[in-house]
Amino acid sequence: MTLTETISAIKPLCESSMRAAERRFQNLAIPLGSLGLLENAIVQLAGIQRRTIPEIGRRAAVVFCADNGVVAQGVTQCGWEVTATVTENMNEGKSAVCLMAARQGMDVYPVDIGVAREVRGDNIIRRKLMYGTRDMTEDSAMTRETCVKAIETGIEIAGFCAERGYQVLCAGEMGIGNTTTSAAVSAVFLGRTPEEVVGRGAGLSSAGLARKTEAVRKALALHKPDPADPIDVLSKVGGLDIAGMAGLYLGGALHGVPVVMDGVISSVAALAAARLCPVAGGYILPSHQSAEPVGKLLLEALGEKPFLTAGMRLGEGTGAAAAVGVIDLALAVYREMASFDDAGIEAYQPLT
Image (cartoon, rainbow, N blue to C red; front, side):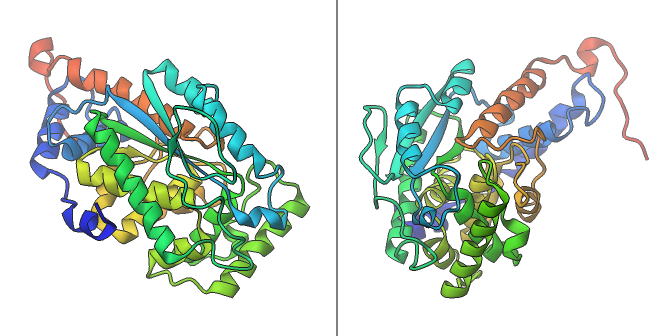
């Protein structure tokens, strides 16, 4: 399905299912609002799945793997070759997100959308569009056409997951240099300076941080991406992983499958998806607030509050996987807790 067709087909959440979920919470034998943000998430899930009692037992993490040409500017602590190595580790179930996912029956799909070399492994979904993007300080990261194709790849994979019965997806990424591209996209979407959005990523020194900030400044000055045109922004200073995740969010919305954000990079992709199709934002759930400086700003722009504030910055979808586990615990209460009548307890009344 094309990007244009997808956007036009996405429907708002089911209001009647959400109101029914709210009434169910009010009748449970627990203090009103006592599960906090987790109640909001379950009500949202009800609206997404169009059922009073949502299910997330079938779950998967989709990890978009791609390299970024801006690595040539010395903006990372390690080289681009790490992307391929971690992608192959995912194929073998040995990466961080794979180990976390295994604990909760979650499948992991690594997607080669732009790794700089061929990767080995039968479990990798092969959708390579480029062998890494171009250096955004010298040229657009990719063409507009390639960017659209990357988004449509994410839409396609969301459909693949929906066909297999997955009830919730986690958006993940792997790509050395992608905190630089996400900072550049954030600066445009949020109207912030490079200094406000650039962080140390995977442990940059002060000198490395300065190079990274200058790379973002140079790319923005060179390309002048249009904040009103998400495709323009992503193609000029974004990454294939970001575009792929944006498509996953849109595809999830199309098929009625909730997608949980991870950290900064997946939040940037979520913001791009919401700018392309505001209705799709209702199908996206938060997870945690990244330790990167722009993490809080992105969540605010999306109107989201994180369940977890653990200072995580690992990526791969690990924060999203952790959040799914927490939501699952709250769902156990929502599904199985006795009502006030069943428990013989006088119902709590809202305070005025």
